[in-house]
Amino acid sequence: MKSINKNAPVTCSKTIIINADINKVWNVLTNINDWHLWQTDISKSIIIGELQANTNFVWKTGGANIKSTLHTVVPNKQFGWTGKTFGMFAIHNWTISEQNNGTTTVLVEESMEGLLATLFKRAFNKSLENGMEKWLHLLKQTCELSN
Image (cartoon, rainbow, N blue to C red; front, side, top):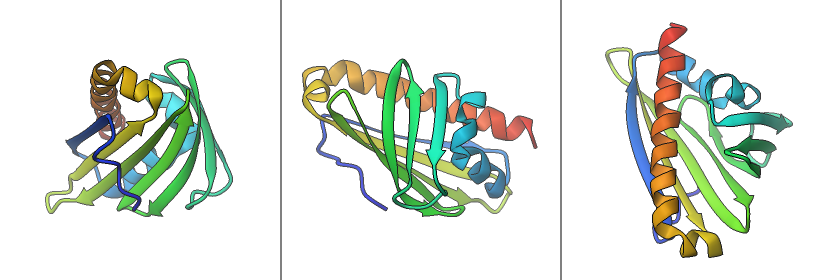
């Protein structure tokens, strides 16, 4: 997995426990074409090829069009991509692990760098933290409701 840049001006890491089977969580998380159905900030998301490293996808979130490239796809373990928008570069990683009680732990990490990330470091860090919390909550809600 490509590591986030821990020295970037904007970084965040969050964890959640989802009361659902790891296969369910993996399938919801990695079905990029359906992100807009449950992730309310995303208005479109289209993968251009297979779910594998070096595959591109385009998506629109919060009004920003983003072109991303998958860097890691390890079924039921790791999922990550890099993305560019507005002169910023982001690394976004998900790590999921199955617990003995049938729940799934999800860790999400992201770093953002570039001129805007440096200039608006405080606002972008807060926005990223809020966005991650929302994404995790919606992922949990979607996976648990369809159990």
